[in-house]
Structure formats: C-alpha cells, structure tokens
Length: 190
Image (cartoon, rainbow, N blue to C red; front, top):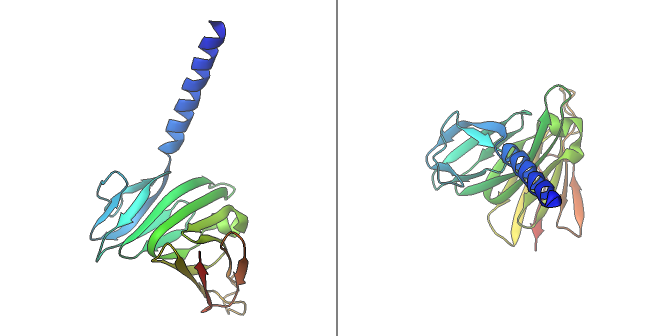
C-alpha cells in the first residue's frame, strides 16, 4: 500500500508539472486579419496570447503574425497551420529551444535570439522534412504533403550591415542541403 501511495503521488506531481508546462505563455498575435483561431476553435485577435502546444490556424483570405518571446517572428499566410511543439526560453541568457511544425500554408520566419545564440536550438518541421536556421529570414511554402519549398531571403554573406549571414540546413530525413545565398531555394519531396 505504501508503494501504491508513492506511485499515485509521483503521477500527480508529473501531471501538475505537465499541466503548468502546457499552459506556458510563449508569444502573442501581433497582427491578425480575418479568420485566425487555435486548435480549440477560439478566435485569435491582435494581442491574443499563444501558449506552448498551441496550433494556429489561419483561414482563407486571412493572415496572422506571431511574435515570440525570443523575438522570433512568424507571419502566416492564408490557409496556414502552425503548431508550437516546444518553446523554452530564458531572456537573461537567451538560452532556449524552439521547435515548431508547419503543417500547411505559406509562412515567413525571422529568427530570434534562440537561433542567434545557438542555431541548433531552432527547428522548423515541415511535412517533408525539417529546417535548421541561423540568424536569418526565410519563407516556407508547405502546400502539399509531398512537396515543400524553402526560400532563403537573407541576409547574405556580404551584407553591408555587418549582420550574421543567413544559413539554412534543410533535410528530408535522409539527405540535407545548406542554403547560404539569399534568393536560393530548395524543394523537399517525399
């Protein structure tokens, strides 16, 4: 009976820890136009909070911009769906981990402090693979389960602002390619 009580207490503590983690605030809707909602079909408007585990769904003729705590910005075009799989961030050290899953649509990403501090700690999943990014801006067109396009916008290696050059590592799970030149893209297929 004593062991049974310990097991119940252990399960209860884990449940509380998971529940509090699942309700962790990670960002806000900076701008939302048209039909923008979460996985619970709740309407998201300018200033709506985004939490760990949320899915943001943008309808037809609609758009949304999500501002994350580490200053990552994701702009979702119409008919887009994005899930926040993992977001941990310490604003004092800029340490963290950010994993998101683009299920469909067109999404523009400007990486934030997590990626700037350690590019390996930002991962963008797409239906046909995954993307790792270093200090950059890029677009993902995930309009098919079988074919997705990833385009690097910049900055380039010889930019005049002294910014860290953009770098994307795109993989289909077997093969990978690095994109370092703005304007270049890759198509990832199943």
